Image (cartoon, rainbow, N blue to C red; front, side, top):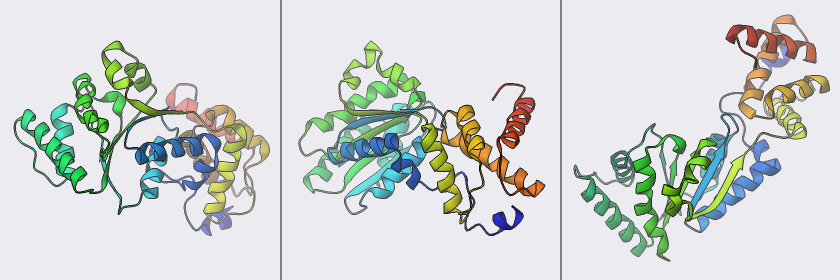
Length: 272
């Protein structure tokens, strides 16, 4: 195992994993297709999923797939985002200085969007991450930005990305006007057992390791504990590889995975 790991071309199961495998899996391919359609139609979309389910990887993949000649992407992420934060960051992303007065910043944004539409400028894709955590006033304020989508010349796409809580929030009566404008929505769950095994093997191959290292029983236990959540898979597999390297093992078996899970439980004081 020591020689195998030392010959890797990249680090498997890193924080910035290879994205291709995700989109070979049915759920991720469908999610990506819906997001691309949403951008093409310049509308509002919502992507939700559990922590570690691959939302960030999916968004990165979407951005990479967009033609920079046709699209400008502005990524916003701020806990408790308020309208002033939204307009300020968005205007700065568009090369404009926001006004001290919120009402004037709103008018400036409207003017900029109208000018871009008239000039057939790049389509604007605004991604709001951690959208489950933005302020209620910000969610309500989105109606203003969404007004531009009523125009056939709209060049604005808006993607809300968040945890499952976002779905519950958008079902509340006070956000009905926003919910009605959601054209496309997708909720990410974990990979299936087969997809999880394929994902693990893919990560190893991407790192230059073509020899099977994880036994079928180890793969089964990993899936059982992670329910196919990629971030959890990455964490367990990383620990397993380093333990195998330390012990000089050529394969990772279910017993080793069991020890890793038991140690994690002891360290946290809770079940994994």
